[in-house]
Image (cartoon, rainbow, N blue to C red):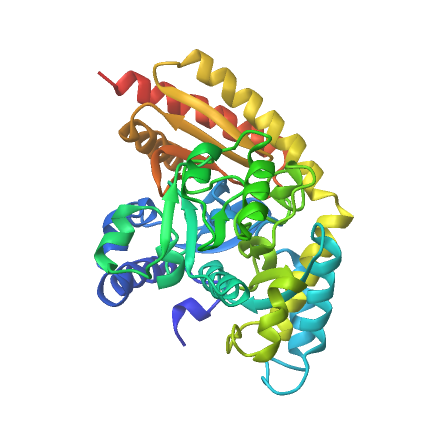
Length: 427
């Protein structure tokens, strides 16, 4: 049996597994992972996790403030979600594609009841990029138009359609020409958006808070203005909640920060499966879905919407509501941000800004190299963080919503130590 399929490894087996993992990653996955991942340099091979803690093969513990880029809202391996998945697995696995799936139907109804306004119908997928691709297709067939507006520093995925809507030259350039018809404008700038709006625009695609752009929070009236422009020109408002949904920013959906603004299309993912199953969704109004009735297989996916994955999502929603985790996220995030802001005032020449909502916090440094050094120092102090993809000056703080106050205090202490270490090394 492969060592990775065994539990209770001996010390010799643990050491061998680490070396095999490094070799397999270098020789059969991608050598770049070994060059760039902090964990590869430290021979950190993940093995198990509970709550806000991730452990390596040797049992070394890290407080997870990266959270799988938003996947682990309920922490690692939440028992109730695992139990719900295993219960369904006792009778069925993947979706047959022909018979009706009762668990999928139940989840779709729950999303319709939970989401704002008249959002109603859902297609399920396995990842956020797929769902954003599907949303682009849905907007085109619903409007008969082929152009879309996206924002600078946006991130919507790496499939060809989603990548065309993503504004990061480093990951776009090698794959050009991409899907045509995408126009990008500065985020949080209604004037620039209005300049390019026309009756050729199928959808405006925006994150309610930009994630990979550096945790960028728009001003309070921005989305009301976007909604009005979309209505004036007959365009659809597509909000990408893949990273911000399910309690991350202090509400179940980040769009709830912008009172009364309801999108036509909302894409979901990451935390939706409770950190146990991969599942994402494109969720829209009856108006958007009307043309999709002609061929209900336009946006389907072979492996998506399986009963176990949908069971994970149903249980995840149940726990989020029962334990009021969005409120916990809001309160813990305020505490986190208040203390990080104190460090900003103590190190104004190092930290440029602290921003975010809920447990979706960005700490931006004046120099990208300093941000990387702080992230590396935190890794050495057993705290997992990462820079944001489109703004390497910013570090994300995105822990499980179940992180304890004691763990937050430990992270804050380690963060302060890391700042001190890096400041002393800087010229």
